[in-house]
Length: 68
Image 1 (tube, rainbow, N blue to C red):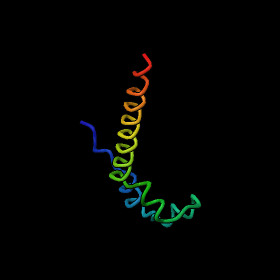
Image 2 (image 1 turned 30 degrees about the vertical axis):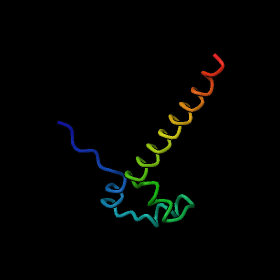
Image 3 (image 1 turned 90 degrees about the horizontal axis):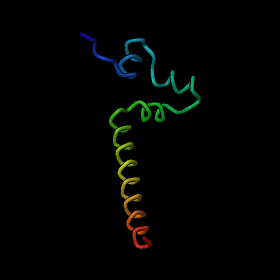
Image 4 (image 1 turned 120 degrees about the vertical axis):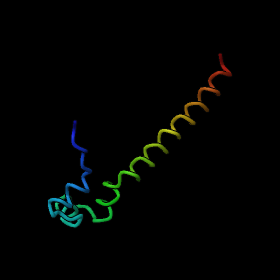
């Protein structure tokens, strides 16, 4: 049986590393680090992007079908 995979946030917390530490090391803001490590936000953005691509491709496919 495999152990549960820890999120990066959990690993940081267990290691005593703060978002401010990561921001300083990466040359970004604490808010940027928080947003990038927010799994829910990443999923929402990814799903939105994929939905928009599908909708746009469907629209283009429908427009192209007029010429076939």
